[in-house]
Length: 281
Image (cartoon, rainbow, N blue to C red; front, side, top):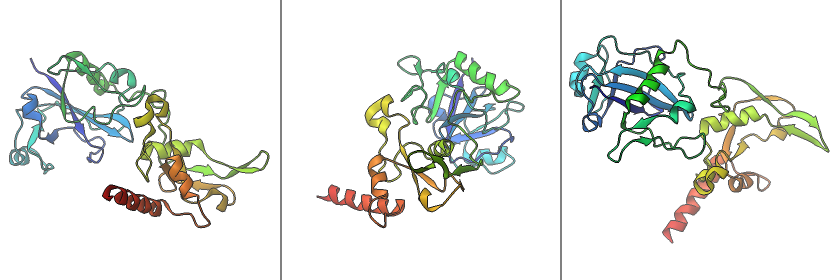
């Protein structure tokens, strides 16, 4: 009986919306037992959100790069093993086919010790390594992913990933509001967009609160404005990727210290130099 597998596509892997998911490549297919007639679901994680890139059914056991070049109408990326889709089995590629949390929590995989689930580091956050490589799904789990492929449109997942927003949306910052003194209002949507893009690790020192405090620290991080808001004098459109950066409270304090505070890059250099000195002592 055919089996079903997930194959992880790193975030840097290029794919084109709407093109057929007719091929995937790696170096673990044979050792995982993947062969003719097996289903393969391509999984990626884009800005922290799990994406079902597509599905194919293998036309043969894994083939070499040279064989794949002869079987495909384009030159594939180089890898030891290649899986080619049987005719009529390639779904369309999509970077918007998000996998809801309720499905992620139901997925089960075969392992030598029995069935295993995906690993979560918090109630809503997957361990970044949990989808790595090639993993064999239970039949019930494969059917859950297949149901997403067969859906005529992507489900509305705004309740599942509440921080996900449009990266192209403009955000206004600097709007004054009356309190005891005038304060520059920081747009929470811009902060969320910054964290969604960069994650919650400090850009300077790499500290991630969830690693040390578990659920209590999950999602906690300061966001630093590369250009001080008070210098902007009124509202301005902020780019949450170019203008904002996540930093821990310690590094954030250093980024505002002195009459001429260091830039993020300058502070990173200071931190790296100090760390190198500590390791060498």
